[in-house]
Length: 513
Image 1 (cartoon, rainbow, N blue to C red):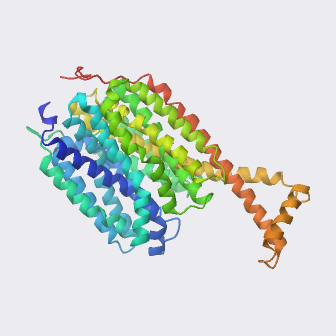
Image 2: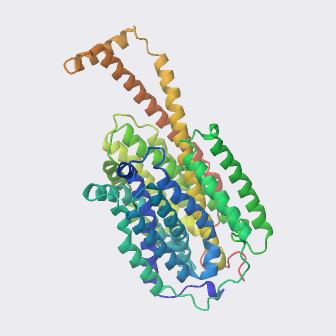
């Protein structure tokens, strides 16, 4: 379809898409680093500060699946530029926020703009590059998308240390204006005719209610003690009913806001399934690893960011190489190799101890970075390249949504499991400690001798420190168990790899006119 083809400067469009994607993803990881400083600035209770992230993600997951419909309604140029400007304006407002409610409100607005940026960047690059160059398009998109989480913790830590948390939002202003300018100037969609199809109001309403409720349950479930909370239970039922009704409605209506029929393409469906498991393992694993470094190793936010930076920098070099030469190898082989590497990375994380040095921490991060390079590019190509051009905007939105949902589920699941397993392990370890046994008495005597000169009651201090050692060991065991579970879950994605279909340049795509 001619209206679905993008022309204009390839370099200019690539710069616009990469800059916007980088800004959007960078913001998420930067904000997570700054939550403690924001809480201190506003005097916000611990159980409320999470709304800074929750508000953004709720808006994000509502907008992402609607991007295909909005692209058809307004065109790539207008919609992409407007989304960048909304995100940028909301970023400035976040930086100027005067209390928590105002910040959460502006973060929701930021999520409305940010939700469109990632899938639209991906769809624009695939529309502008010919099919034989889709590998490079996927690599360039991936470069912008993965550099954000790579740099986020480090950049965030530096900005907070040098200035204040306000600058993690204000820094988006020059990047956003530059990306919007490049997008408006270079994206051209000849003969574009806005879709005049009837607005699927029921679909939009069901999607908004269902996705917002689901995201709230996933984000707040652990803090609210899951289904012991009436609020979480009610919202879980609302999410289930709304989303099931939404799926039935979208499959029956002739003009859906989200075209779920794209899942009839076997390769796309399989790639989306792998992407969901990637989100679960990647975000869940990153959450656990960051928490391990902070609670067990006592690293600062900046130190944790530097561990990620040192271990993941290889992605910046690897992705363009895979995009350039990956087409010469069966993409399924690359994805399978990446999954095996990712599993090995998670398994290595599952054997860390409280005495691990920096090299031991960086090694699994490096393995993961290399593995993601092998997965990200060929998977996105096999997911989108065999679809009709008019399907790619909708498909890119759903493809990215599954990774976001996988990440939310993985993070919520790992957080809950970590709390539960820590208590179980602490009880089990304590039951094996005999206060009057020789080993325990020797431990207590050693601790007493160490602290005798600094405390008034050495025996009480010794018992306290012994309890801390037991709790620390329980925590390490809980981390190791969760990493092992993630390894087993992610290994299941190998089953889906056999369903993927290699994208061959010049082959007539499924359902093409």
